[in-house]
Length: 283
Image 1: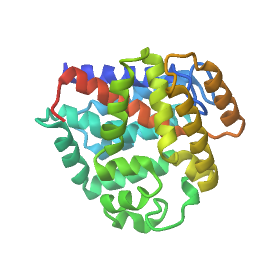
Image 2 (image 1 turned 90 degrees about the vertical axis):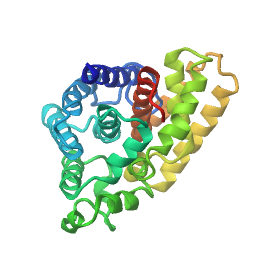
Image 3 (image 1 turned 45 degrees about the vertical axis):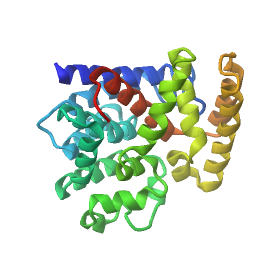
């Protein structure tokens, strides 16, 4: 029963995020050329089956679900979501007394076997811009397999927000995403609350996807645009903000600037919010 509940919560989180117009990112309302909403939903269903398998290790879940999605869809639709949501679902399935303690235990005890599988998943999906990095911890270098998982994540956390979650036990989710969502959804409808959650993530730090693909300057200028839009909407939160959202969305899509990591963080926050509300775990 617990596995079925967490599976449905994960699928709901992926579907909810997809329904919301998120400037620069794919949604049912505003698509990215060459991407398809049905494939995003199919990717969530494929990955969900692996995520609720209690017998598989974290590395086995991440690699198997990534490979299945890539082979079935012929494109990377959900690597970031898989990387972020798998540890949360693992922690829940372990029936923890304190959720964050269990999550930290999972992240700190990723062994060499699972490290190889997780890095193989990243290599298999080849997320946008990752091949541009040539420094220490480059997953395409043979000697990366000799570096501990925590070391690889520590290195990449300097520019990658997903890696940073693995390093600091999901601080961006627990200290930023969840408190913001809990407060904002009291004031506005759920759909707009999700939109504001995404804008909040995009306005706080550089988006990893844009940073990898286009470099610091474009990532920084994109973040500043989100800062302006977020503040303008937040100061008059109940006002219709479709014009501001649509304008920024068109501009970013014309330049192919997709804050994909912020969308992944949005899905992850939605999932953790549901886990927290339904299972009442002490965090």
